[in-house]
Image (cartoon, rainbow over all chains, first blue to last red; front, top):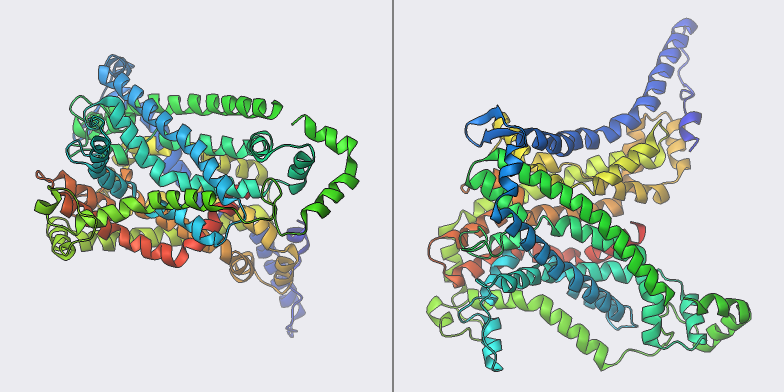
Length: 329
Length: 304
């Protein structure tokens, strides 16, 4: 990128003025301006991101730690320094651990099936289809439906009384499921909403990765006598490893902060009578804006932050391990 | 995996070429290397997937087009004639038009500013040489993994201090440039904009910002359009932060939509009519630009 060095010389000037002196001075000046232009412009151009990230990303995270060490009210503002009292309080709350469990349960129920189904859909989309674009667009439709709308629609489908899913269950002779009172059932319902919105999106990511796999690898496998199923598990899946890691990590960061769908799963929005589906982000909201205790809400926010960092790292290691084992088979 | 290197060694290139000849010439191979069109099973599976993708929306329209008394007896499988009456109830219950206007403003302004600032930064990272550029780019990428949503409490405190709570600025400002946008534009401009072009306009006397405006921005157009699309959809569907910082009297669409259900008596024919109404704008966008969304996701996957 030698451009910037080479273009430092001022533009070959056109005007020939009477006073040579003046023109030399001007030349020197414009040269200087141009030099600073080259030197400073890049920093100027990237600065909006860094300024914004500092103000709305980094500072709030650091300040969250500060707030969490104080008694701090939504209305009253900053109170006295209380050390780790907020953390002690929160960690002693059954609702906190309940929220941790719910968050992980919903996260696992959404991420694992989602990745598996997305890979399956991608494999089918990768076939020599007619009307490729139609099918690809079709799986992406849910992506443009807002999570709140998805939540409201599925809330109706999962209604305990006369909801479509329960009607179907009773129709084939099974007992209806109490989606809004049974904890695990509510998690499954909420995970379904997340899966509805993101499976097609992820399928397209996997499809792109599959198409980037070189053909000769498959040819070699064919010569080796590997059937299609064998090829899928021994060639496609291992070659998708970086993409799987990418999707799983993205799903982790988003999934552990889930709020929208669970928030609208009932009217009150607190996660059910016994907080059966209250997630950590909902718990932060309840502490901060429901009970107006910013100190405690910040303590939970920091704990969730740590959880996400740890899980994202663990995730990375596990996914890598699994993918490599798949390759060794 | 173990067999593949072995084949390469034992059979060699000749075998690969022979295999290729055997397979015939074809644009791109499906796994298994067959030219034949997939059968009913494949289309059946895909049809089921798409039915699953579209069904909830259709269901929402079905419920939203009937009277609540009809619905309590079981939802009919053909739409009723009550959709407009239900839509009118939606407009009575929530400030729908205001929310629609707000969503349009917030999403449009955010999309435009993300594109402008990301392209500017991408231009610098991809094409200009400056001290620390590599490290700074790595930093930008790393910030994508930071769950900034967890900083809501201080962000709210700051917005309250500025007196911005309840105003659209509180929603717009935190989103005016994104790490993803910067990364995306950097990747694109690196290949799409030849160095010689910048060099040429610089020799012609253009300043840096002129070079960006006349050469960088036009070259970035296809990627910028996709970035604008994705930012628009993401901002439109965003709920958590707008829900916290905006008043129910001045909401964006998702915030308003949630109010429909929070009313003390839930009439699903009205709630789901609202869900349909709020989804129509993005469905229209999808009809126009769905193709771009698909290729945007697929390009992002390969490069990212």
